[in-house]
Every structure is written in C-alpha cells, then in structure tokens.
Length: 445
Image 1 (cartoon, rainbow, N blue to C red):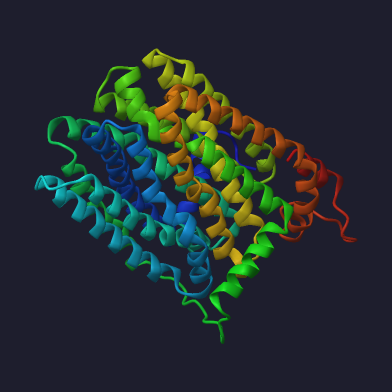
Image 2 (tube, rainbow, N blue to C red):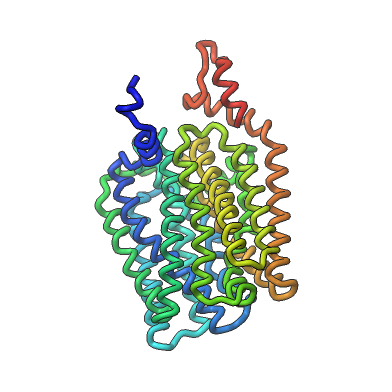
C-alpha cells in the first residue's frame, strides 16, 4: 500500500475524477467538444434573448423552443436504429458539419439585418432534426471511446462536466457580446466552434463496426427496442421519470429571459448570470458523479436529486431577490444534472449491447424530446398565470415523480441485481449466491 506522502489525497481524487481521459479517443473528444459546447451555450442564450427582444412574447419563446426540440421526439427513435446499424463516428461527423452550416446561416441573417421570427423557427426546427440524430448517436458512441468499461460512468459524468463548464463560460460571453455587438456574433462564433470537434472525430482511431448480414425493416427493429425498454422495469421507470422532469421542470430555463427582464429588471447580463449559476450547480453535480467509484447507489440518487430539483424551482418561483435566486439556481442545477447523468449511467450499464443505440434514443426522447412539449406548455402557462406560478406547478410535479420512483426502488434493485452480478459490479460466491458484503453494498442503492 502506498503511503499518504507518496499518494496525496488531492492528487488521487483528481486522477479518479479524470480517469476516463486515459483513453486516447475520449481525450480527443473531450478537447474538441469542450470548445464546441461553449459556442452552443452562446447560441442558446442569444437565441432566447433575440426572440424575446423581437416579440416581447413568452408564448413565442415557447414556440421557438417547441420548434427546436420537437424533432428530437419524432426522429430520435429512428436515429437509435441507425446507431445500432452503422458507424457512429462517421454519422457524428455529418451531424456536426450540418450544425455548423445552420449556425452560419443564422448568423448571416442577423448580421445582415434580414432576420425574421419565421426564419428563427425554421432554422430551430432544422437544428432540432440534426440534434435528434446527433444526441442518441453520441450517447451510444461514448462506449466505443472507452476501452475499459469500468470508466464508462466516469466518462458520462465528464461529458456532463463539459456541458456545464461551457455553461459557465458561454452564457456570460453571450451576455457581454449581445450587449456590445449584438446577437449575430454569438451565432457566428458558434459556427466556428464546431471545427475542433469535427477535427477530433476525424483524428480518432476506432474499430470498424461489423455490418449485420441483414437488416430487418426499421420499424421492426424500432418495435424490438421499444418492447425491450418498456418491458424491463428499471429502464422503463428511469425513462418515465426523465420524461416527467423534462416536461414539467426543465423548461424553467426557457423562462429565464422573463425573470431576467420582468422580475429582476435586468438585461442580457442578468440573463447570462442566471443561466451561469445554474451551470455552476450542474458542474458541481457532474464532478460529484465523476468522483464516484461505482454505479452502486445511483438509483437512490436519481430519486432524491429529482426531488431536490423540484424543490429548487419552487423556491426560485417565490424569490424576488436576484442573489438569492442565483443561489437557488445553483442547487436546482445540481439536482437536475445529477438526476439526468445518473439515469444515463445506469441505463448504459444495464442495457444489452445490441440495443444500446435504441435505448439511448429513448433516453434522448425522455430527456430532450419531452422538452418541446414542456416549452409549449410553459410558454402558454406563463402567458396566462405568470412565469412564477408556472415554475411552482412544474416543481410540484417533479417532487411527485421523485416520490413514485422512490417507492419503486425495491423492485428496481431486484431486477438490476442479476445484471450487476453478471458484470462483476457486485460479487458472487461460487454457487452464484451473492456474498453478504456485496448484497449489503447493493442494498444501499
């Protein structure tokens, strides 16, 4: 055993948190995606501010959000079938190039003064179609970048940390740029930010995916994946909780321009700070997950963090003090990210390999695909009962969903236990009976 002097805790913990970076392909992906995500967050904040500036309408904010996200609900299942059939790296290169083109077109329309709301809706819909393929394929591709499957959970947590580190930088930069040179530059910089991630994908060395001798009809494969996911309780209950939180809770982000301008009487900088504080909480959540050594206990964490997120947005709906609201967003951001990333990790751990793409497409549907309906609902409710009451209702629904999930935990453990035992996550003795220690550790889940 190494002494404490030779193996300081700080250094050990850092190596633990960053252990997925041992894998070359993942290092390339991490570097390229870290830059690209800053541009993505800049575009998201700039788009919300642009729409609200042009229309002064929370309802149209909801329409734009709906247009940008409904394709994820409609097309992600088909993307999952493609992810199980074809080379995932090559498909990701295509989606990143198309995303670059979309951002460039949007920036040119704004910088030339020709932008109209219908164009924003159409281009948001286009990006939504691109993302409906990009997201599930990228989720399924994660496992191909990690040679040691024990590092898979860490890689998923680091993916989340990337998103939220960019969330700290991107919105703040967007606020400064919007106030100084306008929204168009944010979209232009986002288009440039796709170049590093495209280069990183092309530089990877990945094994060629073995083509299946014969593919069945796409609807047959889609039905097979659906039956597998929704006839297995742990996958089904995780997906349903994700869908509920995404429908009723996550759209709180859509209403941030309303709170920034009408509740806190600020401008784009205020909006940037609000989004960034939520990002700090989410980043803390991602680091917390990255430091975990095992998937054991994640189902219990899913339950309490979904409840924490619901409590956070309820508290935010009542707050009228900016610094208090920023602290609340820190907590709610932590809860939302840990619940989403923990769900991803558990699903990736228990899913059968030949159905990974399809299950991750259902994850994308639950996580991202329900958001457009939530955006439309949140925009409509905010126009009639106000943004604060809309968040209050959403938070109550999230807490209720977390309670139902907690009640189902014993049944989830019973179904997941054989999978964890087979994969060596919990130990077994020679007769196939779990050891007392392994069972005790699992019982904490």
